[in-house]
Amino acid sequence: MPLNNSQYDEIFRSYDAKQLKAQHQLEERTKAAYERSPELKALDASIAEISVASARRLLDGDSSALTELKAELKNLRARKEVLMKELSLPENYFEPVYECPDCKDTGYIGGKPCHCFKQQAIDLIYTQSNIKDILTKENFSTLSLDYYSDSNVNPATGLTSLATAKAAVARCHEFVDQFDNTFANLYFFGDTGIGKTFLSNCIAKELIDSAYSVIYFTAFELFDIFAKSRFDKDTLADTMYGYIFDCDLLIIDDLGTELTNSFIASQLFLCLNERLLKKRSTIISTNLSLESIVEIYSERIFSRITSNYTMLRLTGDDIRIKKKLMNMEEQTCYIEKNEI
Image (cartoon, rainbow, N blue to C red; front, top):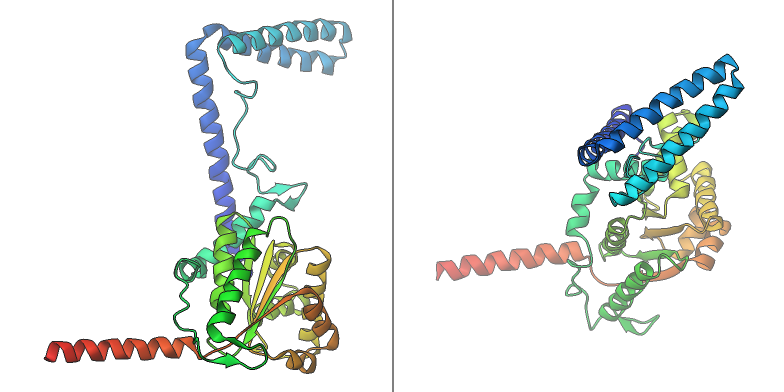
């Protein structure tokens, strides 16, 4: 979902707080250094006075006096460098230490959002949409293969549901481990409730924890942003639109559940194609068969997916139904045990 005005305000307030923190820390460091060396304090005062005097002389056009002031200023700075070395202070001791040195905790570089702003926007969206709560429950550490059958064989591959799931999990780990060095895309497909979204969340959790920018959208949410950006001229949607193309990983969940039309098909192709050109990874999960991709969207989209994505088909029974049945059995056993 795009940022709203209150979310923008919250992010900018956080940048104001970061800058105030950096300035406060600088003041504390400066105070500590001056207490150790009164001479250092006097040098800085002299440097400041001469700098102001140099500016005034420059404005007055007094070039000869300006040359003298510059020489004096050079001597004072040289003495300060020697003194700082004697005090074992680094060269940048009197400079603010920012969380993001690239934008100096302003959020922008050259009028454009900094990478830290983009990540903070994504993090805020995740926090306020409770996605992070989901990732604490759906990740590799909570993944269980107990719900996959070791006897249900897929005649197309000759593999059981369990073997297929194990192979998919291994590929997901490989995707994460090689993410920094290898450009790859994943396409999860199969029936409802067999773990496609869960595996996507496992990957998202690992990459977010490693400071990669990850955006998760259902297909409906994704195309809603595209529509608002194109037809409503929504500036907030425009901002998120840019993130969709530039984030390290885009996850499109439940492709095929949206109301499809020519606009949706063209935007999907644009999104997939642009991310391929930029070598930005994408994960798609869907209940659709590969044949349905051609029918619902286009042969161009089918071609992009089959040529550039690792196809991972999961098979088996609906895990959510299995969990409910298992919970019901456990409750029944508990009741019977207590009645005895």
